[in-house]
Length: 368
Image (cartoon, rainbow, N blue to C red; front, side, top):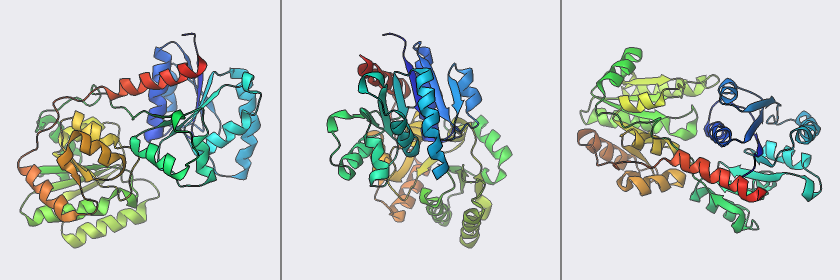
């Protein structure tokens, strides 16, 4: 295959699933000898992206403002300069800007690819993500959502490519992992109990933090010395929400067994230090990456049976997929598993390598 130039567009390169997928595909493009260019407003991941061999162009294409429309001309000039073979939009506003910038005779414009990373709200604005020549869906849940909300979408151009997890980045840890526990409890003394629960998620109400705190109280009522780690919930601008969580923990008498911390890079170490991982989002999610990460690390996961999380749980650990909102079943299963851990899959496939290879095949098929 000849050397391709692939341009990926997204709002920013800070943190999150969209950003991680962008980085992973950029790395795969460079490894395969292609030219990888990312356009975004920038962020903390830019140095890593450039160090891996990609190019980054700063353009604020994710800000929801009329002034952002001026970037249509900027993108058009960039596309003329870069001569990309593929333009891959990963978010709605960048996708709109790219489509408008790509208004050119079909023979002279690059192929347009989109990835639907989430269960976007129905309507014309979100519908731009179905306008790619290929539309990558990050799960079967997302594919069903696209066909239900935008029924005129050609199902033949939809490609399901689940997000990937590299087992080397999440090696199976001993259970218990004394070294990991020591590192974590030294930093967060509230986690120094007999058992640790982990809910890795942003600080939003939809992630089920209050449910996890009620679970902690239910386990204490059963005489289990459990501790709860809400990893990633402490974010700037979430102070009111965090105060609600602190008040709930105090009211239930578990404040001393709770740690609410900021995001951090060593997620594998967090899994290794814990005994049970939770995935309690109140709304269906597009894909349950934490399910794969936790299972690769050798830790069981409990979550609600809906969306991409439910799909993943039913595939890899069916007994962990619980009826949505059934907190009694959640407490009973958690108590049982903290006493006697369930059997986990022996190994997980290298889903990251598979995701990268299949995405590059999409690019190559369009150019070919």
